[in-house]
Image 1 (cartoon, rainbow, N blue to C red):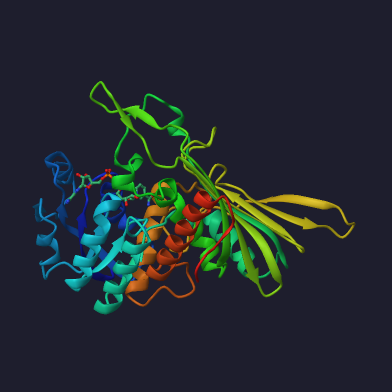
Image 2: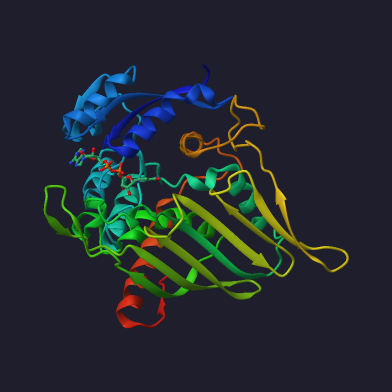
Length: 379
Ligand SMILES: NC(=O)c1ccc[n+]([C@@H]2O[C@H](COP(=O)([O-])OP(=O)(O)OC[C@H]3O[C@@H](n4cnc5c(N)ncnc54)[C@H](O)[C@@H]3O)[C@@H](O)[C@H]2O)c1
């Protein structure tokens, strides 16, 4: 395989740490890429999580102390996938150690933490991006490009959502993502919001104000030990925002929900304009829906099949289907290509500035929830 070698370490060997390991193991699926990552080190407090990495060839360092990875001069890039209350300390330590890293959302447990992380990253001058993989679906790329091209004309309204429904199961035990102390006051916005803001922010849409409807629908859950425990995070968040662009203002609605009945890991973007519209949902990943008015004045929603055409070409033909694991691989391909200065026009991962902007939005949403009014979002 060609490409410059990049040695990677993972801190946090849970759900996402494993997804990263498998994405790197699938690197030969990329037809051509400027770098060649190799996973060499892993850190987790849980021996079972560390043991899982026995199946990954080439892992030379397994440790319970993340400082071991940060001090290792033979690691180029760190992926940090930890519960939200640990983000600030570990991200700042990584920056201070001079390590480039791919962070996980929400990039700090709250706005103040995100501000301190960004300051540390800027001070250190390290290359840092934040994870958000769904916009790398080929259909999402087609929809984003259509909007970016100006083909929809003046934007009338836009919607960007990330929707789950597994919390409809009231027997599901509580976990760190459902507690304010470990997930953050912003709750589901911190969990799913980065997925929803990535493309709108990249299109240059900066909400000037927000009216938020936040719901804690399930305040208590099984604790996993036969008892009950508080589940004190917001489950669902609907943010009605106002965006100013060159043509005027338009409503941009963000939905992040753990209880969106009938949805399972659905990322959706819908943009309607005076000259056209577009909609893509990972629920029907084979189809991008495009709106236009035909020459007879009839309104037409038509289906475009994006095919398996990724930003970074793979050995898998365009006639096959694209899925979640492919999106993770594409996100990693974008992260490492951008780090190597070879991203070109392709979509990049969320920047620290965009992550900070998402916290400003979610913080304003909390204020709106408390006041019952629309609140300004600081720029
Ligand atoms: N991009 C996505 O689609 C996506 C999906 C899920 C989660 N996430 C994000 O990834 C991050 C991790 O989430 P997850 O679902 O992988 O969580 P997880 O609970 O599955 O894994 C977290 C791991 O961190 C380990 N850990 C805890 N404290 C540690 C410490 N001090 N040092 C080393 N390891 C420690 C735990 O033992 C656990 O194995 C979060 O920021 C979350 O928001 C992203």
